Structures are given as structure tokens and as C-alpha cells.
Image (tube, rainbow, N blue to C red; front, side, top):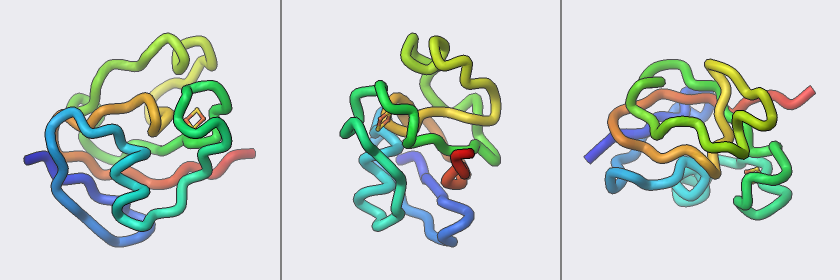
Length: 92
Ligand code: FES
């Protein structure tokens, strides 16, 4: 099973292939802002991908519309397909 690491929190856990990163973060106890509850609308659940960009599902229209570019993703729209290391992104 793919392993997800939140580098800033210093914790890792394995999840089913296809698990959404926001749900994984919630299960790991990592605090990620999620104003719209995972609908892809608010843009607050941003993460920075440190390693494993190619082990994530492709960006969704909600992400391309917001012009998010590598290394940033919306965690509610991103599925884990292989090992990845991420950080909670600071929102300016
Ligand atoms: S939780 Fe709102 S865009 Fe992800």
C-alpha cells in the first residue's frame, strides 16, 4: 500500500491506493484547512508535494481552474497512487 508522509508533522502512514490526501491527513491527525469540506471549491486545503509528484492522481479541473502548479495540489482532489512526501502549504 502507498505510504504518505507529512514532512512537517514528521509522520507517515500507509493507505489504500486511491485514498484522498485530505482524508488521509484527517486520519493521521494532521491539521489541513478545509473550508468547503472537500468539494474542491475553497482552495484552502493546499499541500506542497516534496517527493512523489508522479505518484499522485492528475490535477482535476478544480485545480487547473485555480491555476495551481507544481509543487502545489489541493489535498481533497488528490489521490495517493504511490509513496509521497508532502507538507501543509502556507496560504498567503
Ligand atoms: S477542502 Fe476546499 S478545496 Fe479542498
